[in-house]
Image (tube, rainbow, N blue to C red; front, side, top):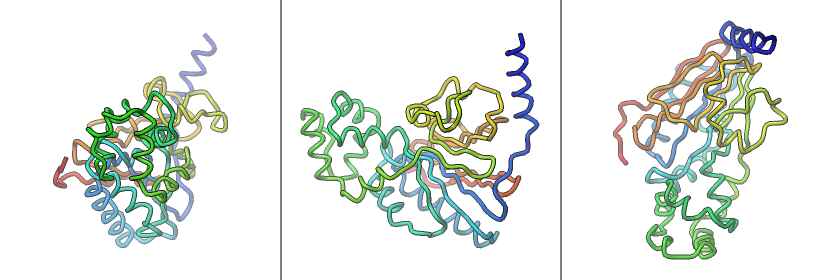
Amino acid sequence: MFSKLVRRLKGDVAARRVFHGPPDARLYAVGDIHGRRDLLDAMLDSIREDIVSRPIGSAVMVFLGDLIDRGPDSAGVVERLLTLGDDPARGLFLLGNHEEVLLRVLAGEPGLAYDWLEYGGAACAESYGVAASMLQAMDEARIARTLAAAIPTEHVAFLEMFGDTVRFGDYLLAHAGIRPGVPIDAQQPQDLRWIREPFLSDPHDHGFKVIHGHTISNGVEQRANRIGIDTGAYRSGVLSAAVVEGREVRFLSTAGQKNRK
């Protein structure tokens, strides 16, 4: 009975809490891109315009992972972000489950390559000039060698440097979410990159608000303790970003962009 009361009170606290970003700083958290270079370019333009129209002392963009797979131009997305520099703001990058699997395939881990191809990897391979049908006819070791020869080493090294979390004031950013009730320094990469439940339905105060992607919703999903911004860009044509400044949260979107699958 007491534990249930504590959990209910924690849920009430999350609903009442006012979350803040650091002073004189702005966050642009960008959702799952999944190979849509066209939408990435549109979002970068929107962020650039936003910074010009609303000057701020410090601005950071956090890309929540799943840059690759499913959409038509994974290679173009990685190249654009690899060469981003500080235009239009400093970029930080989180490792999504799709990047994780690609890196494991490249490392030759068995039992992954064919699943990766089925769940979006075929489009990624095609963007690097490798026919998916050719890969399907190979054994896994040869798939790894073929991909390693096709994907620039700079792209692989870029993905390997991605982190799992970013803290921005009272906000925590992770690709998929967190394991409720587990301290941040004890969270496992498996959860940060892959979790859905029990995170999505958990109503309790985590001590911060989580901004995440990974789970597609028809629009930005705002809850008392989390904000989900994966709006299925690869199929919907809508790439979303959460903008946090002080106690304000607003959103940018590519809604209305041409949906080129």
